[in-house]
Amino acid sequence: MAGRKIKLPRGIKIRKGKTSESIQIAFTYKGVQCRELLQMPATAGNLKYAANLRHEILAEIERGTFSYIEKFPDSKRAAKFGFNTQKPLMKDQLTRAFGIKKDQVKPSSIKAYHTSLTTHLMPAFGHLRVDLVTPAIVRDWFVESGLSAKTLRNHRILLDMALNMAVQDGIISRNPTESLRLEHILPKKRQKSDYKPDPFNKEEISKIIAAADEWYRPMLITWLFTGMRPSELIALTWKDINLEDRFIDVNKGHVLGDRQTPKTESSVRLIDMLPPVYDALIEQRKKTLFLNGEDGQVFRTKKSKTCFLDHRNLGRYVWKPTIARAKIRYRNQYQARHTFASQMLTEGNDIWWLAQQLGHKGVDMINRVYGQWIQDNNKSRYEAKGNWEKVVSNSHDYHTNKIST
Image 1 (cartoon, rainbow, N blue to C red):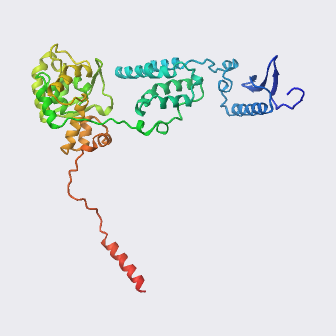
Image 2 (spheres, rainbow, N blue to C red):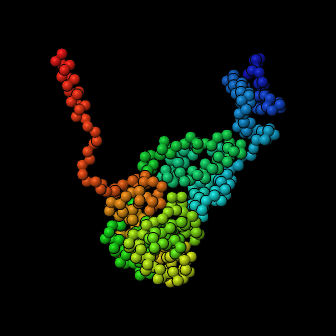
């Protein structure tokens, strides 16, 4: 713009260097005169941009919403006003988020979060500066990861926590993931889980019980006819067993060698003993009640008579050998729970009773997961209520009279 004298907008100046020029914006913030440079040539378009930016800044200062670090992320002056001018990497933010989260959750969940952190989030985002994470970067990872919507939601817990802390610390003004909705991004086939229950039928149940080691047979019967989770089953103590009133008090779980409260409030429940369960526990009492009395575990390993550490321990010593000896198609041990649910529904039992037995708050999950096994107990044809003959008759009479007149 050499050789031309132009009228500059208020608060705007041109700064010339030896080889380049820039535009200076001047404004007052918290009683302090501030001047910031925009590294761009002083063209007519850039000067207009600078003037509009200054007006925007003044309006935000007036409203009390101005963020110095957002408008001028490289400015040293921002720190003087209490803004955090450091730009940490995502690996630091994610590590902080994990450190907070692990004090809020159970040991079994800590392991899942650590896997999420080290296997997925760190490789994808750890090297990035927090302020350079954009919605596009996160969206592309969602799409290109190939992971299901459910898995991505689990990974988002730490990711969102890390970015939300950055917002709270003034490092960024907004979480770049907050506008991202997986249902708007992922293909339909990745939005729904393809997992389906694969329960055992009555013949297979009989084969499992017949093939079971004598020491573990009462345990397997209890498992198959209560639908307890593996962690709940191995945590049972004799204090939880009420043989007189025939119920089991489920109030804890055993995960990774650690006794924990159940996963949800509704998981704390009383389970009715079906006759096979009652008989099995009468037999089991002869095996383990004498070991530690009522405080001792109901079900123990055969050789060492010690407690099962977790579901893997249970699978190694009980589930896998039994299924192999039964010579039936292998399914994982959670199918014991699905077997109980499907068999109870096939026999026409009430779904609200079943939801309580399984530790569900309502029947939504029963309908969604086990709908194909719900029987229609009322085989007679349903008849709609109401007497409509008079209404139709009156309507016919009115129509006839109107035509005749």
